[in-house]
Amino acid sequence: MQVPILRMNDVLIVTLGEDITDEEAISIKHDILVRIKETECEGLLIDISVVDLIDSFMGRVLNEIAEMARLMGSRTAITGMSPQVAITMVELGLKLEGVYTALTVERGFEWLKNQKTGA
Amino acid sequence: MQETIQILSEADAIVARQRGREIARTLGFSIVDQTRIAISISELARNIILYAGTGEVLITDLVAGYDDIGIEVIAADNGPGISDLNLALVDGYSTSNGLGMGLPGTKRLMDEFSIDTTPGVGTRITIRKWLHSRHF
Ligand SMILES: Nc1ncnc2c1ncn2[C@@H]1O[C@H](COP(=O)(O)OP(=O)(O)OP(=O)(O)O)[C@@H](O)[C@H]1O
Ligand SMILES: [Mg+2]
Image (cartoon, rainbow over all chains, first blue to last red; front, side, top):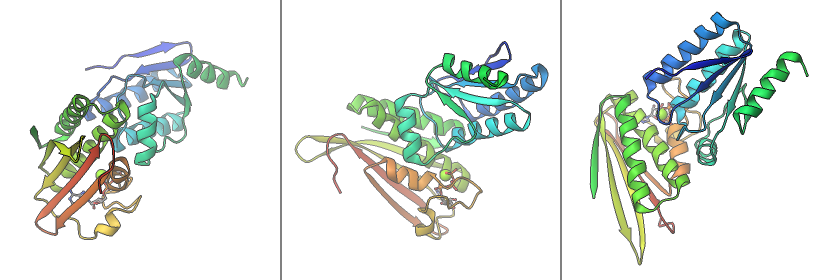
């Protein structure tokens, strides 16, 4: 399943599906980096509202995406984490580093826009 | 009810965790507990693939005491075994450059956790979650 990467102003928006496979996760990582290069977007928003869990593999992939995007000059916001995902991630001991997290896509988007203008 | 899922690749880890979640939901577990169970299955199944190559996950429902029910998951393989169990349960300890969170994290997520492992023979990890109370 191909995950669409949308572009809105200077932000790339990716919505992760409910139960993505490892291969999908790895190809999303690759596609995002290619799109950052192509579009020169300085913001990346990953919406995980329908993601049903983040295990150590998915946590690692998200951290890698954020770190690689950062190296390329792009900031990452992760939005929409559900309570059960947050609870189980913390209990498992996973951390998301170098990412801004927000409740909604709108807030994540606002933050990325403000980073850009320095507001 | 018992269900066995052969773990041969990462895709089977996802199948196993989806089945675990479904069974947990059927038994009446909350969405948070369903997620705790699913993530634990995911971690154990991933360890099977990574360290043993193949193995299986057995999911069983449990009845205990007066009116409690639970879910039991056994992750078993005939892989290399774990040579130092105490170390394997320390946060951050990994022989594969991983985060070393799988086993200690699973222990925190579940009510019961036990490992039976013999170097050169294999590993069998049993985890349980109870609907109402904790039985130790
Ligand atoms: N089924 C198994 N067979 C053999 N060794 C295992 C098995 N499961 C775990 N181990 C050993 O225990 C260590 C700790 O496992 P744990 O799942 O906690 O961390 P990890 O797999 O190294 O990293 P992470 O799960 O965070 O990606 C592993 O590095 C490995 O040495
Ligand atoms: Mg592991």
